[in-house]
Length: 343
Image 1 (tube, rainbow, N blue to C red):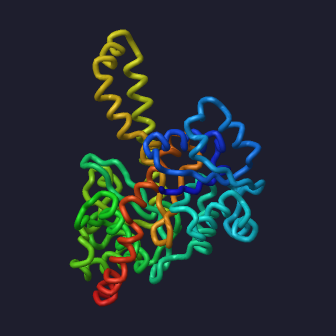
Image 2: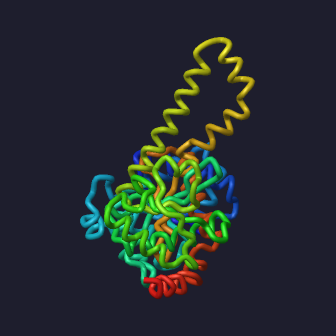
Image 3: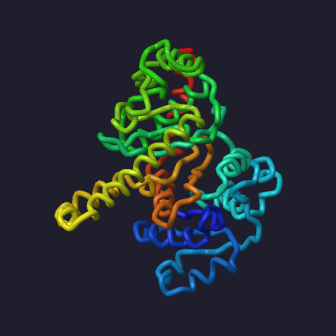
């Protein structure tokens, strides 16, 4: 049985959003057990409601009054947050009591505490946040999405290595293609760090199937299987894509509800439109994995609802079931040796 640790107080709408997400996730994963860390006086009354009866036996509550707030600095969270809902969840992973941690809390605090408590894989300088993005061709791995504001060429190269393994494990692609996000495809364009990272990746063609620079509009076209960037660029790209997706969903709904005939058209198209809305709904792609840690830690969007949080839980469970950590331990050392020889 997979055991999942949940930060029950992280996010804008917790703990109701968290418990609602567990209810949704439990329907897909009936053999998963959830350990929720947080204020029992706020969580237990929710589980006592008839609506949540199906998960009463699947959830244990570990009480704590302490919470890492969304605006708390990472340094302060690291210093005082060990007994918070986030800190206790991470400690359970460190002690091998659970298989993964899911939190919608403070991103910087979660990353900082995870690096100290879970530790970074040997040889990796910095973890990176990775998530799957819907594209015309299917799905693409994007990293880093906000764990590191900046990145050196060597760190971008390591992101590419981890992204390759993640794409192989989650998407089943044997030799995923990799691209660096840039402001143009020409070799002389972009920041020095990005051009230097490209030079490093070009030296190891047997290790990384590098396809060069790609522009932001080519991400959703599915031009490559893995898109590598620093966290500043990645977070902006992700939020822009989420904004466009919400704009499309609202705009289409407004058009179809503008008149009698358009309502009939929407009714006739309800099947394909439902599928389209599901494909572009940011909540369906919620949940970013911190690659490079000695454990599975998933960051959910802080403002998500129960549907989005359920998908973040799914990301954690699927990453476990795909054997990502085993693949990292098996493949990363040899990839990094190739990387060193190429450099």
